[in-house]
Image (tube, rainbow, N blue to C red; front, top):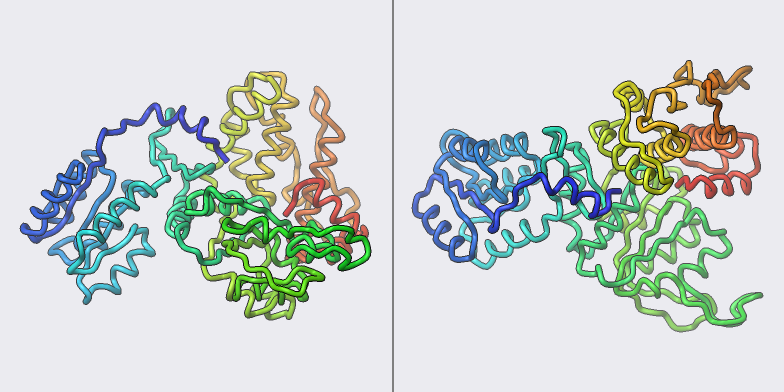
Amino acid sequence: MFPNAVMSEYAESGSVSDRPRLLIVDDDPSLREFLEIFLAKEGYKVDSAETGQKALDMVKQGHYNLVITDVRMPGMDGVELLKQLKMLDAGLPVVLITAFASLDAAVDAMKEGAWDYLTKPFKIEELRDVIDNALSSSHTTSIKSVDTKERIYKLDDMVASSPAMLKIFQLIQQVAASPSSVLITGESGTGKELVAKAVHNLSDRREQPFVVVNCGGIPENLLESELFGHKKGAFTGADRDKVGLFTIANKGTIFLDEIGELPLTLQVKLLRVVQQRSFTPIGATQPVDVDCRIIAATNRNLEKEVMDGNFREDLFYRLNVIHIRMPPLRERKEDIPLLVQYFLEKYSKLHNKKVQGISSFALQALMEYPFPGNVRELENIIERCVALSNSSLILPESLYIAKCKHKDDFEITDEQPQNPLSCEIPENGLDLDAYLADIEKKLLIKALERTKGKKKEAADLLKINFRSFRYRLSKYNIG
């Protein structure tokens, strides 16, 4: 969402030491001394503390890039220290050292945000690898915002300030090196494709293709050919061989967006690819081997789809090896001011306008709005404001969401509303086409929410044919 160039403006305000600074926490003086000597030779700046409380005080007073702590210590143990450190700086990597007896506690601590753990006795090579991964793979950059004390975290092309998104960033870093399949779930517009790209870009496949497939945007009769290819003469119109998207994604990553739209017949073939890493193009007699990581995404509840018989249970478990749930924007409202500022800068440059900020009242209106379209909807709102703005500040009257008198103006009910829109026209007028397009988009999203993502039922709810409904979804880039 935020390009690297934008983040450089914030990075200028943070201080970065020449060498990473590590903090060792252990009540065993011999182990502390050994680690201090070894890590100093490795080129790190190293401090140590014999208690959790002392370590906490040291982190409060200075900046550290990594904390390595024993789990079992008198007073504040390592798990409690982890929780306290995460409250101070959620982006600080913490590595736990544990005996076998406390391994379960260390695993539980991973859920609290620990980067990794080592079991005693550990090898020096293991320690070196864990530290290298925590520092070099930590593309999450924690820095001070220019204007506030809020911490901003960056991963690939995404930035956020909310704890919910920071947990997503940490999970992405942990799973990127794995070849396992990933299933990303979440409402439309939450950034599922950005997460898939981040997983790919942080993996060892980053130099290979990243292929995006919209399973709901390709006609069913063409989808198999698009995915797996076909041989010349396989069917009417097949006048040449076609290479499928799985072949194009070989050695890289294939992102199957809207996986819940995949027909049952193709689910069987996809299952073979996931299990055996091979498939047979249409009209071919020999299977084709493929090596690509599969990342799938959906705004549906696939577990319910399995129960309803619309999605294969075996395929669901094969795809859901690693699950990443993208929270809707209403669950991470701390990110709204940050995103607003970015979109203002982006579209001010695009439209050659000098819109520099947003009024507190307009921002408050956005903070109170539920955003059914999530980040994508927020971006559309800000783009419209910039395009229509005649001043350097976005005011409440520029936000059509703030002009609607009733919160249920766009709610779909069983009865036909007599007056579904109760909005005022601003003194300087409005762009009717853009305004109506916005209303249409909201109703499409509401219909999908009402029908739990079932597009045919959503089309019937809006009393339009299915082809027209899919065209409108594509028009507004609704997943």
